Length: 327
Image 1 (spheres, rainbow, N blue to C red):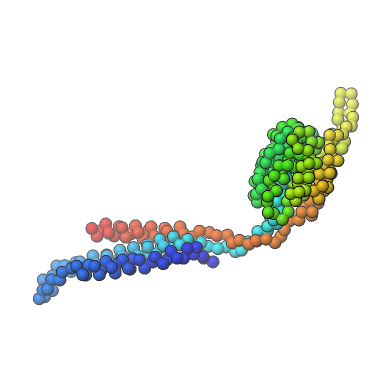
Image 2 (cartoon, rainbow, N blue to C red):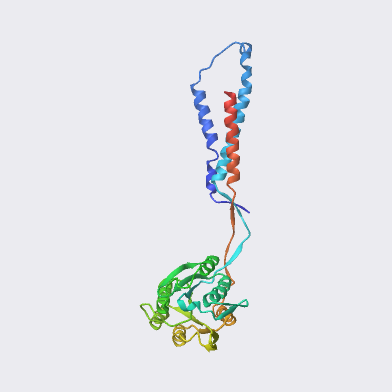
């Protein structure tokens, strides 16, 4: 359907008639009359009839141009079919570890061995695409923690900026407490119904100014739920000059602290040793923090003012051309 945003603008439509009426009255009052016995002597002026027709044409062209100018100024627009926008009211912050240990190649993705960050990017990007209706934010942490993407409904941008991250961008160490503290700071004063932080790391807190336990206490006071994910294989084979041996690449993972942080904030701790486990973890989080299917409705609008504006300009051009031709 067509909607006029500012219909009151059309109230100016009679102004040309009012102006013409006032101008005609003033002209009649000030013009002297010449009385003659017959009109035959003035037959020479009969050619003025064409000028009269031209004047009338110019007037109606100008009037039509005025109407279309007003119509364009009234902002006509086309309203499309209503579209439902699911709004969950949830603010979901993602905290991703970029410390040096994330370059450990102990995951297999599509048949190829990849580092932990690459696997995290792939699975987390799919998770982001499913979070319709949530406001998402991204915190990156290493030696320092910083907000990479503020809360937004623009999920493709969050996924893209996550994909562009590199190991060591925030320093080689791991400031888990600072990452939690930064998320608390960004979410504390929000009026959202649910505030959730999903923290992904492969190590222990080795940097920062606040410990994870203390940061978790602040998160609990702010109503923030934290789900922690510890990633990394338990055992891999390493080939050396004199043979192969097994070792645990996740020996530095502080599961106890991650579990405590989750439990103190009514969240859950998950352990991901491979891509399949990591994918299943995010599927579980989807159930713990379900996507809302009901929400607000909006109708897409398409501006229509260029069409009446173009007509107004065209008619104005024709009127100006007739005036020039008459002169």
